[in-house]
Image 1 (cartoon, helix red, strand yellow):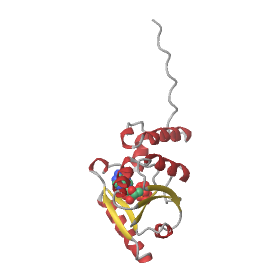
Image 2 (cartoon, rainbow, N blue to C red):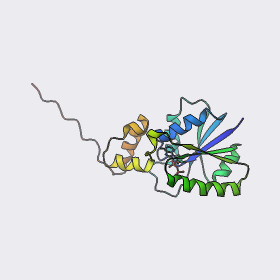
Image 3 (cartoon, rainbow, N blue to C red):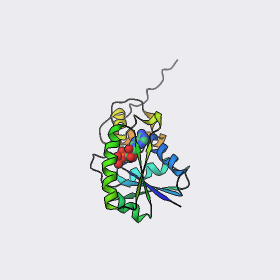
Image 4 (cartoon, helix red, strand yellow):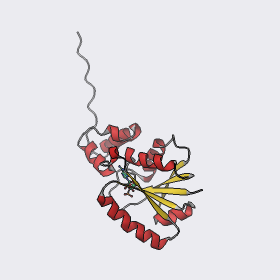
Length: 175
Ligand code: ADP
């Protein structure tokens, strides 16, 4: 019975990620989402926040658990006794990057297989980084993330001074 890990930055988790993990949960005995501690990108959320947001998005999936990791993904997979690493593919650019990483991972850990899942059509254009930009520019992208993630995004962007706090509600005019 195969165990899979699904690694990523998840800054923050989107419905694109939830779609992938929901689909792979049907294929494997257990799926362990690995939230990478220190990816080489500017992060909005702390590791613990990214873990908690992902946990809150997969409460319906009983064979999925979420944990953080640091270091090489293949070492994380080995420590979880996983035989498979899952990644999602959206565009050609994802393919090139994943292919390169897959070859390196195969060299480092020949026993671990990569399974790439094609993004569902409705999430092909969804990325955490683009979502952050849309939220900063006050666009409505709420349908692309779980509700608790949309709330956390706004709170974090206000805290970081990237968007203004919501204006106080106007008192309604008396008749
Ligand atoms: P990373 O920094 O490791 O690329 P991400 O959080 O951006 O982490 O993505 C984690 C994984 O999920 C990657 O394999 C990525 O290609 C995949 N992914 C991201 N967004 C989507 C999406 N909308 N549909 C399918 N897969 C996605």
